[in-house]
Image 1 (cartoon, rainbow, N blue to C red):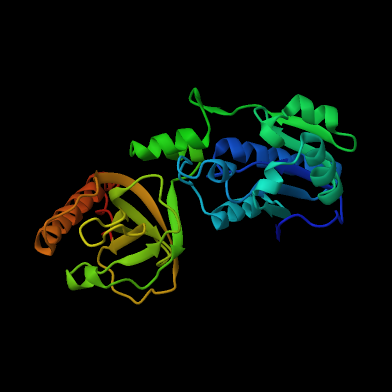
Image 2 (image 1 turned 90 degrees about the vertical axis):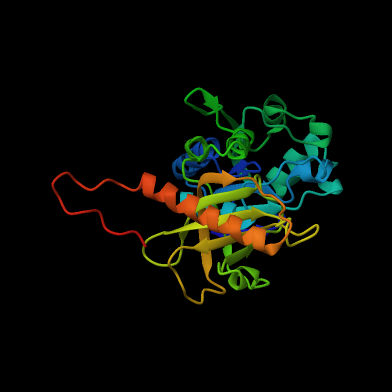
Length: 320
């Protein structure tokens, strides 16, 4: 997949295009990507995605913008997995926000992207003041056709980024996984930290986060990327109120029964079960005692959810 940072000066090839923020790439987004690939094959055009960074809501109201469900890298990986051949990442600026619907259709979609077929959601809005909708886009489309994607519902619930955030805030990870079509995880490269966890007897793999996550707390998790099978672990996601004042968000993961140098390794942390909220403790001794309890509760969770041994057969393999 070719990734373009910004819009090209002019289109080099005609494309089949879909437009959106695709935060989380949930099952509604996946339906759009599947339809894009299908139409692109029929039309013999490269399938392309136009997405935005930052999210328009971060541009217009940064203080009230919702937390992101996925990183830009995560979105691009999902696009590539579906077979998207081109991803255009447009930086949302005041200049871009000021484009009229006519200018967006003529200058962006036609002249600079070469769109011959465009897929949008049925609630799509575009242009200055969000003045344009699907009907307006069809009226303005001189050189491309427009298709609107209907809302996707999962067990009667609309698949949306907002619904995923709500499920994560409630620690309803099965519901979030249903909406996403996969378990929710946070990925990144393991970075050096302050080594406090090691001094307390709980060495952690640290993932630094550029933005606040959609939820915080202490969780039982699985870690992917440390071998052929995922590893069981307990994780702290948040700002570490006991040891940092106004700290930046951090994901700290204590992997059970594991000791290896993994700095720089890319891992993905899959969230399974909430243990408790973040809390501030009066001293490190109190914090250490709480971490021991957290580890115990996480191990108990994995013991409860481990597959049972087959009747009359050998016991299930020991967990790592």
